[in-house]
Image 1 (cartoon, rainbow, N blue to C red):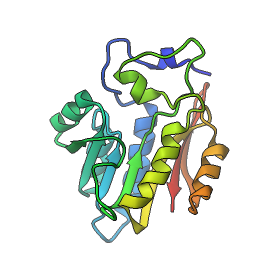
Image 2 (image 1 turned 180 degrees about the vertical axis):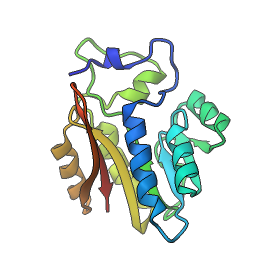
Image 3 (image 1 turned 90 degrees about the vertical axis):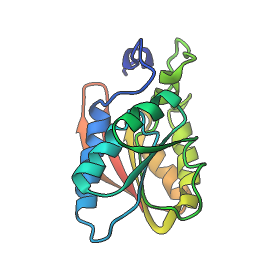
Amino acid sequence: MTDLKERRGLDGKVYQPAEDSYLLAKSVSAELQNRDDNPRVLDVGTGSGFIAEYIKKHAEVPVIGTDINPHACQEAQNRGIEVIRGNLVEPFHRDAFDVIVCNPPYLPDSPEGTFDDWMEVALSGQTSGKDVIDQLLEASQRVLKSDGLLYLLISTLTGIDEVIDSVERTGRSAAVIAEDNYPFETLVVLKII
């Protein structure tokens, strides 16, 4: 298992694109390119804005970002992404989006303890690795239209079956649409209906 300390940038205040970002951006873009409508997309925890920018460019759909980190909001704006500072989906009204995309903090906390900085917020899924995921699964139901989709990047470090169980407890279903294997984890993109 990769230690949280090893995954974080020592000087960074904003999570920068990594293998998880690329997998999610490419997978969702491919899915959205096949739609006839012009879905309104929200990138929750947009970070640097890379995923939002990639989807906006390749799927040619409007994307709004949200992040609690003011440094991330500024960086996403510098990429040309409309971004609103807020926690998860709090700033938005009911049925505002057709699609939500999220690369959430999914790493379980390190046994050596936690840091008190913006990278900790971007990476740490708390003790289980899925605390933020569970919050998003619940909160997303309010802002997604009734036929809306949630695309979620998760890791075997968090527990894929455990996340799917959480999805099913909300009355929805999940399907794996992409995965990538690495020595320390497998990354999976879930399409949640």
